[in-house]
Figure 1 (cartoon, rainbow, N blue to C red):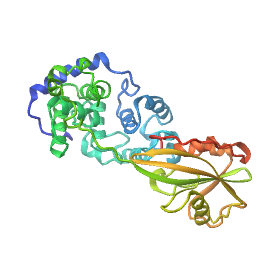
Figure 2: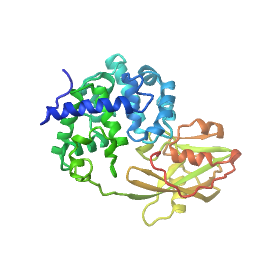
Figure 3: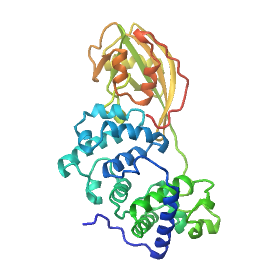
Figure 4: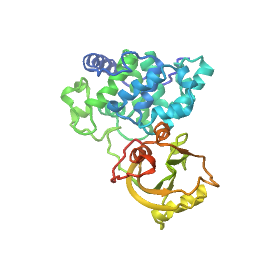
Amino acid sequence: MNGQTDSHPRDDGLAKEMARALTSWFERSARALPWRHQPDPYRVWVAEVMLQQTTVAACIPRFERFIRRFPDIRSLASAPLEEVLAEWEGLGYYTRARNLWRAAGMVLEEYGGRLPSDLESLRRLPGIGPYTAGAIRSIAFDLPAGMVDANIRRVLGRVCGIRGAGAEAEREVRQMCFSVSSAGSPRTVNQALMELGSLVCLPRSPLCGECPLEDLCRARREQSFDCWHGSVPQASRTVRVEEVCVTASMDGLWLVSRPCDGRWRGMWEFPRARVEAGSSPDFEARALLERDFGLQPSGLQQTGSLRYRVTVHDTRLHVFRAWLPQPPSSAVREWRLCTPAELADVPLPNPMRRIARSLGAEGRDRLSLSVEKESAGA
């Protein structure tokens, strides 16, 4: 079984021309990225997962650090999940790390620690969808695959003149990607398509004079760039959310708990809750301590606020300081009291780490946070 079932597109001649041009351009212009000089399956997999919601520039040092800590599938699978989440801290979208860890265990158990090369087996692994499976197959194993992300979708939609935003247009783009990758080295061609979309075929003001596919491109010929599959502007959507977070201490120890929802599962946070419509942040802060931890604080005051964004949710987090007369008595969440030194080693999501860094030693609070946007670190 070759693991790839896409049929060939309408124009194999165009695919061969594109593969030649892309290969020549990529050999001259490819960025020197750490996962490229040694494209073994594990490194490609980790890089593709990190790059799903993280810029290349931010990914480079974190990829190198992650690989030093977990150099292979066996070391990742055998590590406690909390250690993996701690190493992922700051990259955001922690489901990626949890799935990576779960999938490493499956690969170790079912495939002897070696990633499979066929799409069907790859797709069975947690966190690996059609694009990531295609990326692993083509980049790590140099086998043809129709992998489509936003960059490849935009490039092929424009070059091949594929219109529409529906399933048929997406199928046509995937077929074209498979055919182009089959016409050359899939490793080189698919990375070239990704690079081209990232650096040259930009969503706005594409740099056509630098594009190796300029002479083949329908969008260039028609001087129309935003009517093709992958280029039609999408209406932005934002959901505004209000939350409270309480930094509570007792005798210099800070209270942290497991998250109140699934977003940061496996990590820790300062107690947090949603501010319901018609309520107020100070009411919700007191209710949170009483309802979830059985606590009546001896003092409570708001110390600042910050903003963070996860997908379409733009959240304003009101931060409160509380002083506790005793430990939680009837908590409904798992909790622990940490010294400042221990707090530095606890895996916290980005907004919580920002708060932790603003806390003074020995229970003194120095929190002074402006309202800022946290784009992808939540």
